Length: 284
Image (cartoon, rainbow, N blue to C red; front, side, top):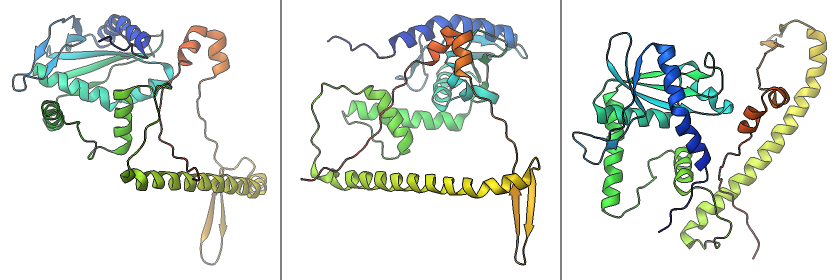
């Protein structure tokens, strides 16, 4: 059977090509010795658990071995890696590798630009047996479902994570497929989705109306505050505390990025796929 091409094949190829670069700057930044490892490993207690690693490294501070995962992302995903953070799905992947290799230390090297001084994150993790046990409990359930030919249940998975997982499993929607007819048992949840959509639309309209009213009341207040940050109005029953504080936010200027770094700008424009269930009620 012919394998269906992946919608992000180019992105996957780019990530693979960038692995040596991420590994190189991890070694430069941390002082650790990075080595290639092309072997396939098997967990000592779970025969189904196989793994191959992007790289291995030897920690500069104590000579202990570690597993290095090399990643790359676009600028708009760089915030996921700020201040030592890392996406949970990558954390689970690396903890799984630490368990298979029976190693205590792991690290990421994630790059997203062409300046290795600022466009790289190298957060490290230490092996956590409790999280590891949770991972292998779920893997055991999954392997059991495969052997029994029973699809794994999403019953105990948070809805947001379940939807993200299903989107990854099934990929993009196909326009040429026929319309699905739902069994009657789905009428209640479908109607509830439609009701909640309507409630959200009404709430959004009310929020917009409230925002406009608050802005109208705020004009005179702002005139009185001028360049002051705080104000107060004392009454017989309480105090009304007023803040009018300047907050600075930094956002990427798309015009500047397009003008000075057109290649990066085009990369940042790559479409991201998402799917959301919507229900419309059509009278009979």
